Length: 526
Ligand SMILES: Nc1ncnc2c1ncn2[C@@H]1O[C@H](COP(=O)(O)OP(=O)(O)OP(=O)(O)O)[C@@H](O)[C@H]1O
Ligand SMILES: [Mg+2]
Image (cartoon, rainbow, N blue to C red; front, side):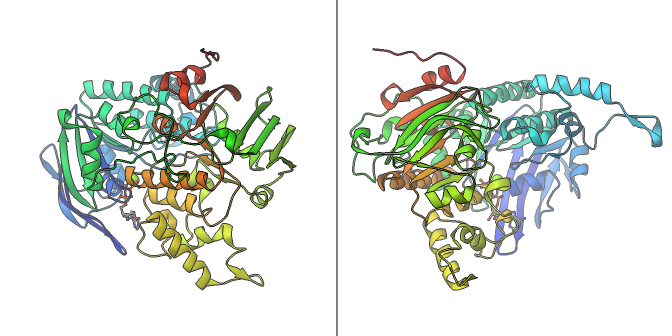
């Protein structure tokens, strides 16, 4: 249906695509994999008419095409769901679904067919399994639901070729499953689906064929029966990643057996090694309630050296809880103790001063200043270290940025590059990296590896392991079950804002987490 040959694209300082070829047939699900910055999104943007290629050709139904706008590509049935959310926050869900595609009656002075649009909206939302009223403002929805609105919007546009750039990075298991059902329906009706994801388990579940990119070039292809985690990693990274989940390495070896082999990866790697009783409690949350939170107060404690996973469905209140702890939501009752002492955190500034740090879930809105440089983004929370008499010392800031970039293997042409132009996963590294030079007591990581490639993921896991070994208490909010199982010493499961249960490592399994996350009661087995 669609063929691209020898596509090249350069941005200032980067050859993003260096002669990539690709084809996709009707009714096929083609997965594109590759490390952060490999050029996946750039290629998709070219197919969808957002960027013009510098060289190369595209054939649609065996006819050469050249799109000079998104509208042109869309008119030919190519629809792209962007990696980063792309909705109008100040408009309703229904308005977003039909933006630029509204039903209008009465010619030039026409009016919107609101009622019929709302009905169609309702059907589309139902199709993606999203329970939200069409008149709700998109800005009020959490990222997972906004992502589902994006997907519904693409369905509204009746694509022949539907490109999904990391559609599941903010979805939970259940929403992801719903999306896979939608994909299966689309495939049956002859739509070609191009699917980009760093979650290789998903690729394995959904793809008919895999195309891998490395440094802007094709690095290989796998047919359905050849798709395996190991082969995909080899094609992307060019090496085998044995030590994926590195829990307990920095502390010097592991003694606890790994959790159930759900992924095929967990089994071959190390497991948590901390003996909780050896470490003091660093963060203690007692009977906490916060504005906009649930009625039931929440209590839990995290020890130094411990990584506590926080699981739950989208909307379970994990992010809200993190925000309350970080001083972004007023507390209504209860108390927070750090190292045994009650602290009063009324703003992020208080939290940072007390040594409690948060990396937010939505990096573009809350984690970065997109138009600012890599150096400034890394420098912003560390102004105290890099300035004297109220003036920033640029040399010191750039040295710090340089070191951090090296340590995190940040892929950027220069330190002055605006972070908004970096690939999604690279942006995530900056969000984590800016806290690296501080010595936090408690680190709350909200979806720390969202959109991050396998190589960088294993680097981030190694970092988390190091942080834990240094005595930091880590709360890891994650919707990636593989990651929760692989990295947590213990898992707290939230359901509708309440703590639905707690699972020690020995009792960890995908089923146990999903059971609690979906409102099942805590079963205490002997
Ligand atoms: N508009 C732009 N201006 C400058 N450089 C860009 C722009 N868009 C992309 N790049 C660069 O092109 C390269 C490829 O980026 P791209 O976003 O395609 O990667 P990706 O494979 O989608 O990565 P990820 O998995 O992190 O999403 C990166 O080095 C990126 O920084
Ligand atoms: Mg991308």
